[in-house]
Image (cartoon, helix red, strand yellow):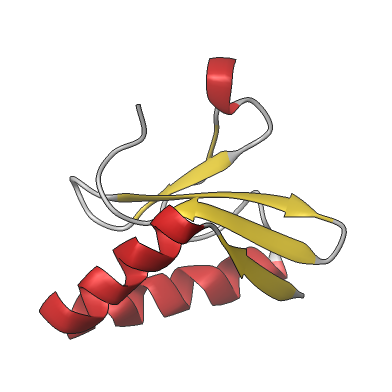
Length: 85
């Protein structure tokens, strides 16, 4: 499985790299878990609805989420900072 980062998600990731190494480690752990099972595991996976239908969310911490979709063998990451709207 490979990763496809949206421009916004990549900016979020670069933000964490410069501000919080532990958050980067958490993102990496969650990405590994998504590769194993996109709908189960750490971060309390939640299937999203409405304008984010088809996407999933996992908790990075109390405030921040990673939002993604798995298509075939590609994990599309659309955000990894803040809470989805």
